[in-house]
Length: 433
Image (cartoon, rainbow, N blue to C red; front, side):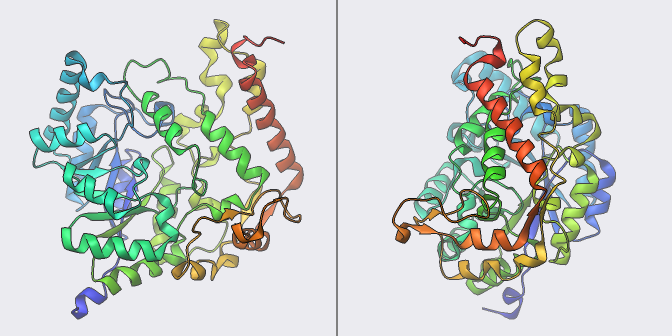
């Protein structure tokens, strides 16, 4: 391995909110090689509900692509819906997909992200010069899965987030893809639950909530987000076991990348509905490989204070559903229980107190252990064999996390009441009680 291979630095792909000044600002850091974005909705859909995304025209997208290229930044267009309701196999809708792809190509987009094997193969057949990146929503985490997707035409693969803390597996993946040339990407600051049970359904739900003509495009109940947040706030250690990568720990991945001699590893930063201030703060932290402060400020983007001004109403379901409430389709009393759901300024993770946290994972992954992270600041409530559990993240959580307990209890109560209304169908004015 020559000296140049030993000193490669990881590059980043960043969510883009269509603020032109943001491109000029992030280009100064020299670490962002690409951005990713899409229309508010289109005939394929993506991985985020339309209601949290900015409105943009195809003419504007072309302008933004040109600006990116001027600043040596590539543009990835997202087509990462998990489900199209089989409409990709219906001639009328298939034609619309081809028209969408024609627009993507004509806009000089560099690559697309997909989560559908047929869409992947169709693109490689008809648009061979368009690079294809495979979505994290497919939860790829084995050499065999990577091999399959390479056969389907993948140029790049975003791995399941579990791989973030499995360095032995990541090492083997980088060794393999060094031979094939497939680029590998990891999500750095996406705060999904460890081995999340909601991931697939969440991806399916957002697919339909971002497709043109779907009923939920403009008003969508974010069920998976509410349940996920309830689990995290009830057991805050789940925020530590979530598989984020701190700016301070990027060097571990660079060291592994250089050990293997495979420079084709990048990190992905979220969130597309966020303010430029939030995105710049995040890029700055990863550029400096250090962040002093509340880790929530760069890994928990879905907070009202970080949302684009014209998307803050998406954080208040009683506003989003106003028209349908007036038609009696939804219960306003139920929806008002979510008014403070996106306000989390009372929750603090001291990033400095997490120094050394990742050391364990360099040699040992979570394996098939069950996280002993239930409850908060109390003894374990798990009544199972201790050999099958791990309390590592719990211990670090109690060291690094501080919360306003009164606000936490109120927050939990509000989500629980809403989910109870949802489960009893009261939200739809259809409860049997």
